[in-house]
Amino acid sequence: MMRSLLGILLLVPFCVSGLDLDASLESLVRSQGYPFEQHSVVTEDGYILTLHRIPYGRNHTGQIGRPVLLQHGILCSSAGWLLSRPDKALGLILADQGYDVWLPNSRGNTYSRMHKNISIHSAKYWDFSFHEMGYYDLPACVDYILHNTGYSKLEYIGHSQGTTIFFVFASTRPEYNKKISYMSALAPIVFLDNMRGTLRGLNYLSAQLELFCKLTGIHEVLHDSWAVRLAEKVLCEAFSFEEKICDNIVFLIVGYDAQQWNMTLLPMIDTYMPAGTSIKQLVHFSQIAKNGGYFRNYDYGYIKNLEIYHQRIPPVYDLSKISVPVTLHYGNNDWLTGLNDIMKLNSSLPDSNTKLVPFSYFNHLDFMWAKDVDKLLYKDLLKILKTH
Image 1: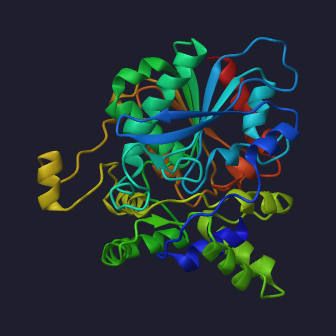
Image 2: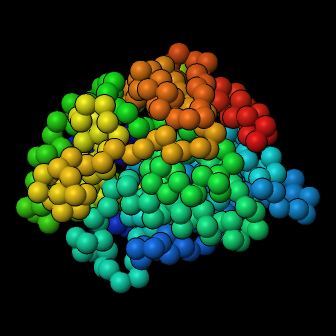
């Protein structure tokens, strides 16, 4: 992952064509004693998404438990929840706790690169951001899961962008609030006024990135490819001090935490990430970071905004429509979102509370892959889930 992130920084805004994964996620999961299913869901606007499912754990008693949906963050996939050993990977922990675990893949990532009518090589396919993921992808996944399990509600856990798209989903489709019993937001990304580190500076290059990609016909970014792998090899492996260089680049993005940075997991993470997304997705996040504290729809410019939204400025997502109970889990060393951003989000939601991870250096990636994530975060998360 260190090498992938180094490749990310130096390859942006270059885009690349995808390759097959080097390892099978299904084989990885089954080798640890878990079942694994793959499902396909078609969204209202024609995107074909892959959902992975682990219906039960290693101590299966013959009965399938209640469903929980785990939603990955940007440039990740369902694999992110499954790469650690069984007592550290949240997807496997939940299965062993008796939950029916569903892991969607957002449009455009490694596992969800199909459409009923549109070619993945066309600009139209990549004309999406987190808005479409929330408005189209999540409703399709929730309906599919509930239909196939017979339950009327499910529990939702999201990390980073996985929280962003939930707040789009529950505010723009408020009728779905009744289908979610509880939402756990890990490192929530909604307000980005207090973003720190390298990405804050890169936000101001988003307009140039968007223009470059329009001129060159580039629409996809950072899918697993030969170009990313080559950059990793040249830029990391060429130096004897490669680990310190790559470590520091990661920490400049997410916050410094050498104590919890899981070096042994890196080869596995590097196999599955980055999983790709659209240029428009990155630009939308950049707009949120620069727009003065508003969580808004995509800004197309005054003229096109009038055409699409019938107003010059994109509409704000109305978070007051979200009735689902929400817990906002945050870390003080998460450079992608600050304490004030978390508290602003908490005050914007009708039924929410905050939970600080009790380790001062806990950063944005630690929510999934920290050495002690089970003790620092998942133990409390499981207790809260049981109350719902």
